[in-house]
Image (cartoon, rainbow, N blue to C red; front, top):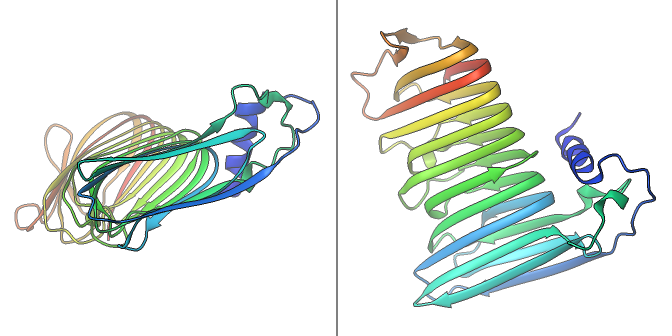
Length: 289
């Protein structure tokens, strides 16, 4: 089953609960919003997205943000707001179901038809917080000026990339995945000093490639599933393992006392990554790039 089919199926199961009623009519609405950048010193962004496809990337430095969305106004509502005070902007975007809509009537609903795309400036420091329900999310956070990052997903298929280095230092980056496939590429470009990744059920695929000019720590946990971690060969890596019924593969690492595994270049590497990895049932695979 493809990722889009998976997301649509999960949305159907969650929202319909097996109803056999006729499908509700869909009334698609398309909107576009944008705002020019006028010297704002900081941008606080919070996004809630229930169902559909979501895309985010760096846009023009001259534009603070641009939003393009298509959604069914019979079943969902979109609210967006931008406020500014003392050269600090606050952007809020929320797409959720109408309280008065009986979602049990939405048999054969086209959950894949809705989408939202958001471009954010790469010229303004920002804090970015996102929460997804049954969504297919594709995020390229490369080139943004992220100082803080929080992402929570439900039953989603999420792919994140840092195609360019972060222009800021992000002290804390937190990723919380539910019953999902969750993939992050280029974490070395993220600028994150402390990385926290947790998953309920599913696969966590974490690629730490990128431009490393700092040390970092990470706490990675999955309840039931697989953790796949890729780390650059030149990076010194320490793995602190705390697992129950989980297989563990780490070729090229040397086992120490107390559940610790070290890369062979730990003592000579210029930069270091220390990971605490834990889980209940599944498997952990560590690979060198």
